[in-house]
Length: 55
Ligand SMILES: [Zn+2]
View 1 (cartoon, rainbow, N blue to C red):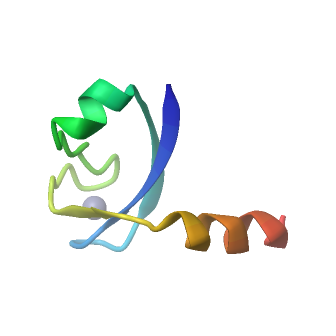
View 2 (cartoon, rainbow, N blue to C red):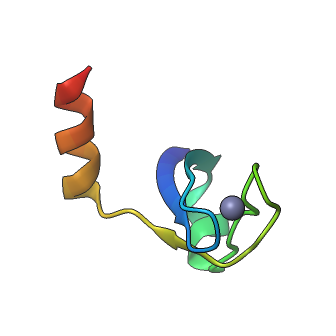
C-alpha cells in the first residue's frame, strides 16, 4: 500500500489517503474529510518531499 496526498479543490484542505495500487489505478478519488467533496487533486510526489523537510 502507498500513501497519496490530496488537496481539496473546494476548501483547500490537504490530506493523505492510504490506498492500494489497484485502488489508485481505478482512479478512485477520496472524499475530502473536511467538506466531503470528491473534487480533489493528487499532490505531486515532489511537493510531498518539500513539505516533509519542513517538519
Ligand atoms: Zn474540502
